[in-house]
Amino acid sequence: MAVTDGRGATAVDHGGRNLPVRFGAQYAIDAFAWALAVVVGEALRYEYNLSAIAVAPMLVLAAVAAALQLVVGWSFNLYQGRYTYGTFEEVRALGMAVLVVAVVLAVPIGLFGTTVGVPRSTVVIALPIALLIMFGARYLKRLYVEHKYRPGANAERTLIYGAGYLGAELVRRMMTDPDSGFVPVGLLDDDPAYRNVRHGSVPVRGTLADLDAVSKQTGAKVLVVAIARADSALLRRANDAGTALGLQVKVLPRLDEILAGRTGLTDMRDVSIEDLIGRHAVDTEVATIAGYLAGRRVLVTGAGGSIGAELCRQIVAFGPAELIMLDRDETGLQAAQLATAGHGLLDTPDVVLADIRDADALRHVFLERRPEVVFHAAALKHLPMLEQYPDEAWKTNVIGTLNVLEAARDCGVQTFVNISTDKAANPTSVLGHSKRVAEKLTAWMAIETDATFLSVRFGNVIGSRGSMLPTFAALIRSGGPVTVTHPDATRYFMTIPEACQLVVQAGGIGSPGEVLILDMGEPVRILDVAERMIEMSGRDVDIVFTGLREGEKLHEELVGASEQTSRPRHPKISHARVVAVPPSALDKTEWDLQMLRKVRDNDTAMIAIRRPKVVPVGKWRS
Image (cartoon, rainbow, N blue to C red; front, top):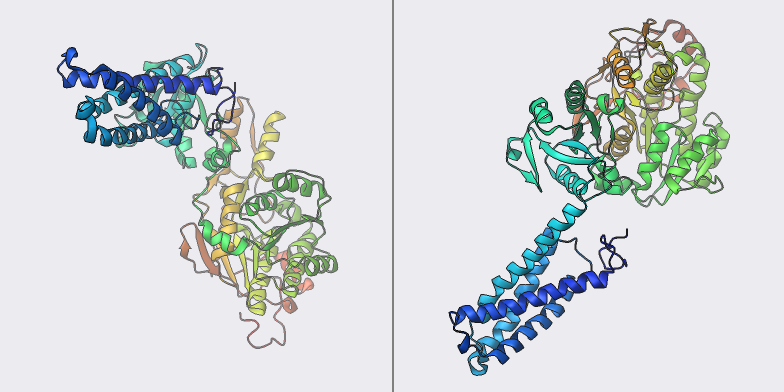
């Protein structure tokens, strides 16, 4: 079943007829409307004294009006498949076309009408009559089409929460899709302005608080949340209300996915745990981002990881001159290439296989490819693993970061974004200390180069490889038990797309040497997440508390004890400063000692580094 592409290019419409036949019939109705309107107009003018009507001039006028309707209507794309039947856009174009026809007819009739036997008022009277007939024909056709293409009798009766644009579009899509498994029977909205709104034949029946009564009244079995910027708190409220009543609760894809064409309005899905604890896409100042990414050579380290791959996907949208994806994981690089280039051939220069621990290889890549913007996402991130192997954290998160920083300096990188973690704020773990040192090295390189070298700090991202949610899901699938460290432990969570969106924007608004801290919202209790996931799975799985692991905090922090923050540019990004530390101050022996003690870093103890004897003036400040 083909449809028009907006230019009349397709051959068949929804009814299976050729477009020329469909729009030829549409024009025939419009021509008949003008002819009838002219006849009725003259009859009204002569107060139904038909003997006073000059039939031949009247018929000529009707024929001319019909011919003009074809010419003018064609110029307004009325008969070329441009408009969906009965939409406001078609009505507006039709009204303009009929008005133009009337004006063109009115001029000669006004000048010569009495001479040829046509009253000057004929066109004025005929205009509203013709419009009424044309509008009426289209309205009846639309009613017929909507009835014909309504969902079948087996479609689930559905309530839509959200009576705005998305809700209205969802109603329209459902009511005109015979294959839809859902038929809307009511809308809900908490905004009093929508109290008396009706979309098509579907009225707003109340607010979410009325869900119980409305679901019983309509016999609804499904609740769809159709609110573009619904946050996790709203989704939890809707999900809990719907689930308590035995309704299936579904959500729409993210608005940016709909606008990008990756999904459609009818691609509804069940509520996921990510929806209930995560955050959703934020408004982005595109001009700010495009200014430093468009037309630039951009390199991403750790491009095969969850954060790196999403960064690459988002960066491509801003038109960089070249995107260079670097990682030591060839399988991860292939996945990143699939997401950005649409293939995973691994034989093109956009993918680079290299290890950030290898300073010589890294320097060769940077000097050869000359990136202008660098996002440093490569890191070891699993806290318990690094507690066992602190040397690996030193080699990758500290020395590896230093290698990337020095390579960036040597090739003249102007914007460098080091991706950090909330565990770097008042660190108590090997991971936190290593990322804290990486922030300090980045701040030092900003002083060294006078370029925009900065760090971005945020908490847990939902769904990244090896993170909590996939681990819980695997434990639940295997029958449990689900292991939770502590009943009161909390963590900050953010979706990968939102985290990367803010990271990319941070590169455009940050100043040299800053640490930008992403607003993570309210922390979420891990036990609540585990309980929700078990409930959503429908399984009977036990939860076992294992106790906090070495170096692990009960509650994470985003801001260090000695840091002062401000939000001058973006409501969800705070700016802070850390002590700048030069590479000459790094001391592996001191690192080993400090990792044994893991003292909280307050920027005066200088954890993991030792102050050098000689510091060039203006190159480092504590």
